[in-house]
Image (tube, rainbow, N blue to C red; front, side, top):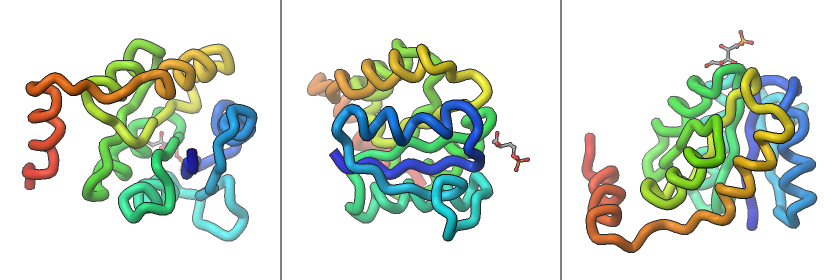
Length: 145
Ligand SMILES: O=C[C@H](O)[C@H](O)[C@H](O)COP(=O)(O)O
């Protein structure tokens, strides 16, 4: 899968998520602090990764900042993006299953290497629910203005 990755620093999980994704066989596009040619502030970096998803250059994205909050907020401003801030595997599974989330937001502060592995395992194992209520909820997101 092609995955766009953005971070506002190279600290902690931000510095390891690209290698972790490549080790899992994914093709990675980099933004922010992960790309020497780009502005590394969280709003700009996360926007770039989210636009890759919305405009078809990537199937999913991973965005990271110190808390994960700014990265998630910025990504969710892009139409068609459903970003989920996940600090544990259960949340990551729920985000994929119930929310059909297409952008994983991570906290650099909280996400240890072990947690990253657990979160990515759950994220990639999860598939969007076909339950009618879940499908209706996700579809309604595109109607909210
Ligand atoms: O939501 C914002 C993020 O947690 C940022 O990573 C945090 O604000 C730190 O950003 P900066 O290093 O630019 O002060």
